[in-house]
Amino acid sequence: MSKKRFRENVRNQLQMKDKERVKEETEAVQNRLFAHDVWQKSSVIALTYAVGDEFPTKQIIEQAFNEGKRIAMPKCVPETKDMRFYEIEQLDQLEPSFFGLMEPDPDQCKKIVRDQIDLLIVPGLVYDRKGYRIGFGGGYFDRFLAGYRSFDTVSLAYREQLAAERFPNEPHDQRVNFVITADEVIECQ
Image (cartoon, rainbow, N blue to C red):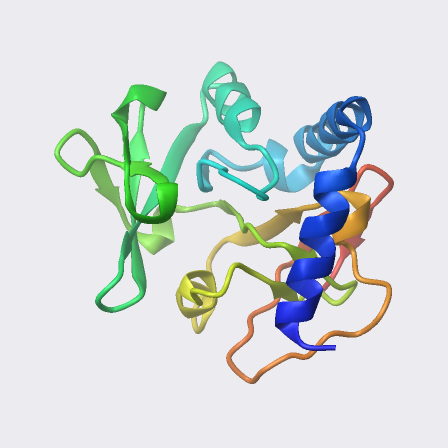
């Protein structure tokens, strides 16, 4: 099955999911994340502000702020398909960007370099047990994750997002260290 087909199947399953079940599963995944060592030992957490089909991150950002952790969020550079991370201190430092994304306003935030990040929460749509993911098609995270990494990587997923079968991987695809679902923490590397 193609990546496009995997994306379509998972999107359809997520749209049909019962809202109460989504709420319960979201809470269970977040609790597993907050209890995990990678969260506990991290002081700078990088993640996106979730939109659309992405696993919700607003409560994760708020929890990080409550625990005194620093939050870094990416600003995409479409011309090069790169990301630059900026520290936000409050959610109103985000601004609408292309494709309906919410990204940090560089005029209000200071830049964060790769070595300052302790934990990167990597978005996606479909995951396998080896840590490979099918994202939303831009390749931004695969480019950022290629090469040297001084930080842990985690993806958060609903049960429907964990693929039962292998999906196509390409040489540039990058794995995450952990996939966290409501049922388990999958150590991938």
